[in-house]
Length: 138
Image (cartoon, rainbow, N blue to C red; front, side, top):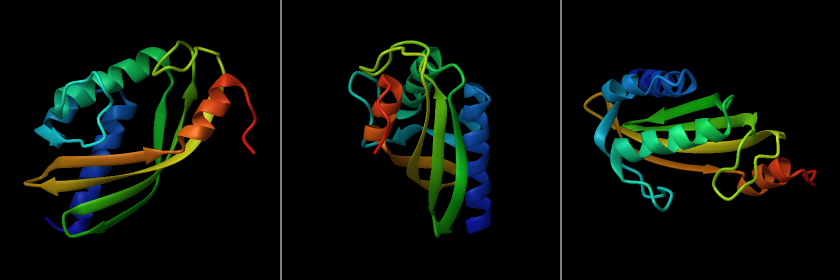
């Protein structure tokens, strides 16, 4: 696939997550998705990714990821993103403070045969924690 087609897959992936349409992921993400930075206690593959999304949405019902930039080369797509939401309930060791948050992040995906087969992501965890617990970022 060409780089524009690969970027379109990433856009569809993010739209499905933002719409909480986890069934759509079956067409976009490989069942044996490789996620080396999977959170402890969650299964691997697409099933684990879906469960993390469900846990995130349960705690932060308005959680959204906005793609700011996409860059693609070969089978690799990089996304610069903004994560936002409201910490309505406790999750991932953070309290349900009711505070809103907006933090920067990025993820890289590898695409094969029209599906995402690998996902690696990072976000500004320190800023996320500060915003959720109520401390102003520096």
